Image (cartoon, rainbow, N blue to C red; front, side, top):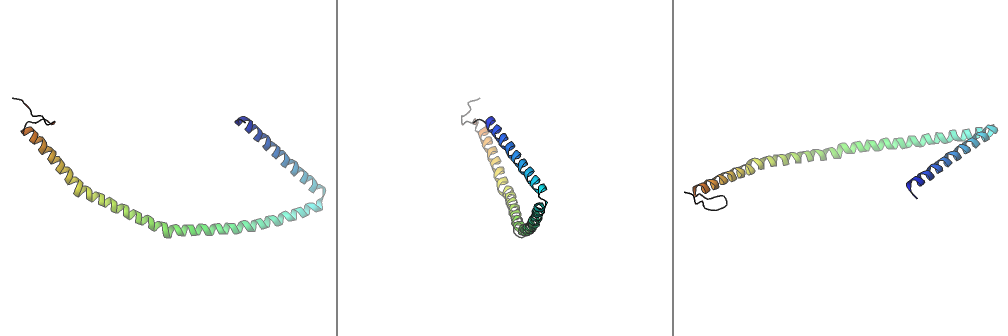
Length: 138
């Protein structure tokens, strides 16, 4: 089946389900309207059911609040110290990188520059070209 026919079948099924629910609700309303004593019993049962549901939802809400409290406490007691130590480690790495940059890389770069200058000066003095070929001028 292609997508359009599947979508058409799904719409038909949804329409049928809605129609059945409406017929069922209409039948229940008619039955309860024609039998007031049974309507009172059904009403009382629904009141009891809703009261039990409110108690269950209240208990579950209390459990949810307790779990949120425990989560917040865990974040404060366990995750925040881990973040602090991670920040300290990052600051240590930053300091180490700065130290290495100032005391190792900078002198090596200067020495490399001096050596390149000396090599160029030696090449000019010996009249060599950068490729190693001796100049035969004048």
